Length: 132
Image (tube, rainbow, N blue to C red):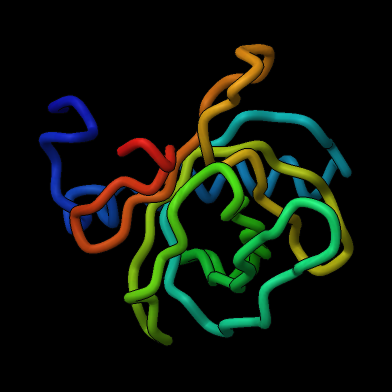
């Protein structure tokens, strides 16, 4: 496989079941704090969370049917202004369990360098750092 920046979103969609299996295991076991990668389709676009660090929030559905809340920090990474229902996104971030399928956060770089950097890929654009 090519490096992720050389591969289209369509290429990643073919890999969904591998990602989905890992995310299903994390959900079933109630596991937290695991770096994961995945692909999903935007189901719901929520209002931004403006308390504390600001987060753009949306719900995606995986090919397996599992849903995830994406909480993308827009104080540290660009907002995805071109996001619409039905869009495909790929993500790399930290999984946190909840009864609705889980939450993905840390989809940005860590300015303190203490956490693995994450990202979101949408329409061929990586959303990771305000300096991008």
